[in-house]
Length: 116
Image 1 (cartoon, rainbow, N blue to C red):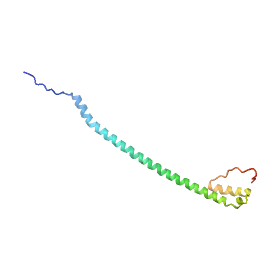
Image 2 (image 1 turned 45 degrees about the vertical axis):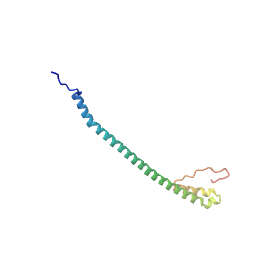
Image 3 (image 1 turned 60 degrees about the horizontal axis):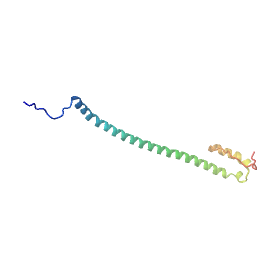
């Protein structure tokens, strides 16, 4: 009698087990990778939003400081001692105004100006 052997390839149990594990693990890994990329995109957007907000706050602080300094300089520019070119009188006035605004008046005057 002829033996009736099947012509199909027979896989080992180890191969079937590997296929089963791969069929279970690969979709989980793919889903985890998808979630990780979505999380990274969301975090990047949040960081960008935070950076924009911080930049706006810094700009507001700098603008406020500059406005204060401009007001101080406008006040010093209206000094009658400066209009008369009396730097000896203007210097103490400028020093008192500058200490209030956080501005230090350090400058060079031509030799013809003696304010001491």
